[in-house]
Image 1: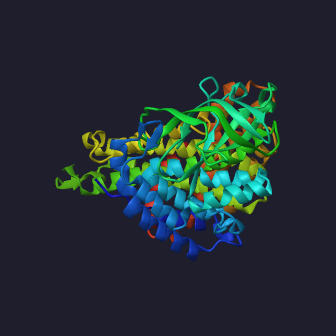
Image 2: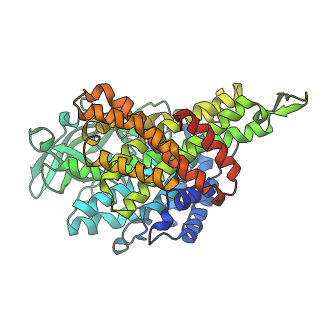
Image 3: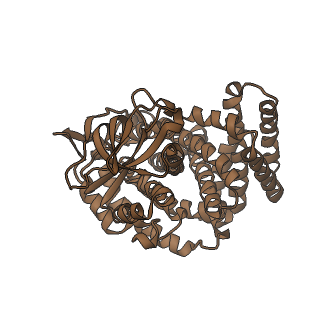
Length: 518
């Protein structure tokens, strides 16, 4: 088994030279490299070694509480003591006040090292953003500091047995109870719904305050302890048995008169929750990238060492000297490099703040492309290793199992395709994306971008003419991906001189772009 090695050089190259974070006034590549190096060393030394035993041991439900695998609590305590939960929290609430780009560095490394543990910790930045945007001053002062210190971890409670992606069917109910609220109902698929790593848990719960469809949904802060210090009425009824992420407790929760407080306006819960969901979707894109990068690292190391067959001169060669194996390795590498560039582009545009329509279009495309890149990369990695890839020994089968959920949660990929075709294609977001592509084509002088844009424009025209979006949604998504791949491929090609292995980048881009006719 190859130990986890954080792809820090690739990450910094992508942010600085491909996504062009260097154009942001607050971007400090030296600081990013220094902090990224500290986190990479921590992830490689303390977090990654728990990934395999955590997968084998899994989580346990004992007396209504979840026990994490051995070593997880100790690693989390070290993570909190080093200040990583406070990275992007505002300084006025005991945070470090750094931007989302620093989080993009640590999040990908964390996911590659141990996706299960990252799942339990990863909702804190989104929770902080939600409280900052919608909370009262008192709520901010009460909830953000413990989130920043690591004392509290957060969950996002949306899904119910009868309400998956259709949130209008949510039945979990909130009722006024004196000065506060009480919540009754059930939620499923709650990542980190309970755990023994942090002292406290803050549940962000979407609950119904009226029968007026999605307008009857409100958002609530539901701590694991009541105002009197007693444990709140939130019970874990089961831990889901999953294909992967065995060390991440995906819980079914029962709320039985649980004490809660409204955040934001009554009936505006969905808008408030999307603040957290959009952060989660960007994070999921990086999870997909992390799995593709891990698959490349394992497969390329194995193929460079494994002697198999003979070359044209009759001499024994390693696997990576065979054309078909080289093709697969380059494709995996291209998936990681281009996926990372797409995700980083979305993060940089968010930080710039001057193109919200473009960000709205980029976010679902990045989520879909990067999650499918993670699955495809793991699948190809297994193929490179052959029979050994199918065994647990080299752990690519775990990479595939863990990556598979990313295309489902935070909005199944088909739902994102439908959003693109229905809500975004014909509006300002679609126009912003077209303008971006044209600008990229002009700046790069790369004809591949314009070539990819032609079918995208044709499908968009059909949508604008009234063709049923459900028929064209998948085609429009794939066309949008092809345009972005061409744009990022052009950027990567022009930036290769800044990479420590320009030949590798050029080969990966060429191999991957060929699949998108660019």
